[in-house]
Image (cartoon, rainbow, N blue to C red; front, side, top):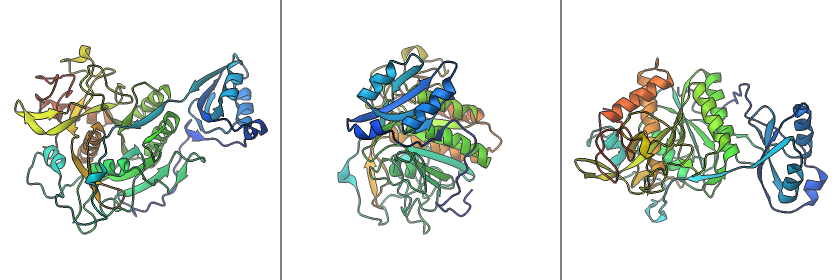
Length: 422
């Protein structure tokens, strides 16, 4: 719902555990210049709340992601000292990064009309080699949790509804989502680029959807799982507060599961948000799906190449494969690929106002997030579960037979298949 399309949106924070909590730094923190790292502190015992409050006065509390826990930065000496308290569980927070291979040689200059307004991925998912513009997604929010988004891009500025940064010293900064890396801007373009006000730019899958640009990764393409978890929970709360349907896209991941992100994904899913995530770029090794894509409540997306094998598009060799035990059952369990989409040599928006062509499951995931927004707008009565089933059914109708481990039916390379618009 386009509203004013202003970035300066009011902050609609519903009651949630994912809230920033600030406190002044203690003297011992200020005097110790040792390198710090991110830690999640969980407090137990009869006086848990009192102990937590005391610790939050001593340390800069970042996010409260559980009733008796919070994240903070501390050095090794502080970490070891707190480990001696039997009522504290300290966990070093995982780092997460993007799933893409960037090539700066492909970057075009600041905006000039692109040679191809509907790149091969758009033509493929629309099942129309002659498509000249796209449509759909009205009233649906797509939260792109990534390196930020260049909201001033000719092809994106008309889609932006929210722009927020979860990576700063002040945990949540409204109206800021600057993208230096480029990854997030590229992802957003594949989801919902609208060709610009004059229709001369590139189109994404669902150009009428509303963009929630949430910066959760730094300018180097990596970030902390607590920031990501907080953004996931915030997305769910915003969706409830605004009474709108929302899709999350996460073209990021790690080989290890983060309990903070898993809990946040489950929180969002329980509130009716559809979570779409890249499968990972760990190659054709069986069981290599990264997290959060590997979670049962996330739709893991594999990457297709723009070439045919055995009569269908081919799963890219870099695209991670699912677990063997899930092969052929058309059921989703942890570690499964669910759907395939274009992810190799994808042309999309870039922070300099131009475009870039890059590859990765990071590029496949936004095609599915955009399709989800388009289908949901066409079926507003769908729950997120019904929407997920519809995407699965569309994938089944377009089986993928090309690529290592691809086979007839549900397989560990392509999942259910390639979900399309038509």
